[in-house]
Structure formats: C-alpha cells, structure tokens
Length: 70
Figure 1 (cartoon, rainbow, N blue to C red):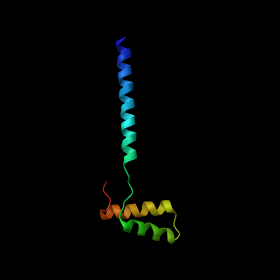
Figure 2: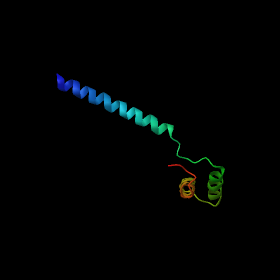
Figure 3: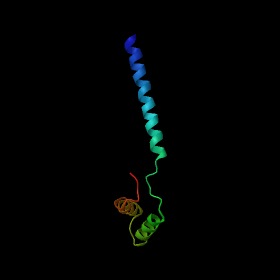
Figure 4: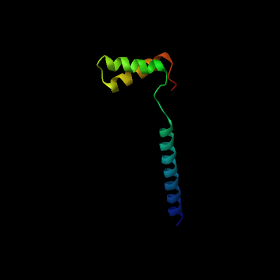
C-alpha cells in the first residue's frame, strides 16, 4: 500500500515538472528584436539565401556582438 502511494506521488511530481517546463519554453522568445537584425535577415534573403539559413546566420552574428542575451 505504501509503495503505491510513493509511485503516485512520483507520477504527480513528474507531471508537474513536465507542465512547468513546457510553460517555460513557450514563454521564451529566442529571436532578437533589434531593427538591425531584421535588416540583416532581409538582406541575406534578398541575396538568395534560405530563410532558415539567414535566421541562424544573423542570430550568430548578433550573439557574437552581444546583442542577444543568452
């Protein structure tokens, strides 16, 4: 009987952790906001590169410059 209660408590704890973690991930926006970032991405796409490539490229450049908080 006691082992059943322990397992139930552990399962409830795991569910709470999963829900809390999922909520935290939804609240975070990893995309930088500066206007220069939008210009970087637009210029990169206009040069004929894929949108996903440009997103990664510009995020990397801004992260190196310290514009994006980690």
